[in-house]
Image (cartoon, rainbow, N blue to C red; front, side):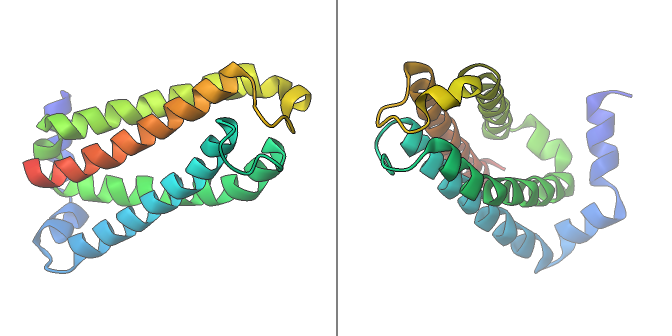
Length: 163
């Protein structure tokens, strides 16, 4: 089965049709998606700014991470689910949309950045946890994360004008 056939099948499911044709369902799901994304970007920015040595320099990185990452993951799960529901309502159209594709690529890059950070730099967090200025690898990860998430928001907004 080709990806076009999968997208067409997905788009023709009952719930996808309901989202697409309802006057209130799509905007309600979209509102949940935007609010969840605001939670993700807002919370992860707090950690990124700490990694950059810009904010909360008096607090340990591990303390900030422990406090905000549950909120980040909750927001991300909600954004992913609501985003999937929105996508499924017009999967064929979205799958061909350049800003949507760019948003998905940026999500993969943000995930890769996080994976590299946690598997390399964060493993030694005990050595720099309370440092006012974290090591270069942590600053790079924080900076890239901010760039990726701002670009994800930009592309998500752009999708609204191209589909």
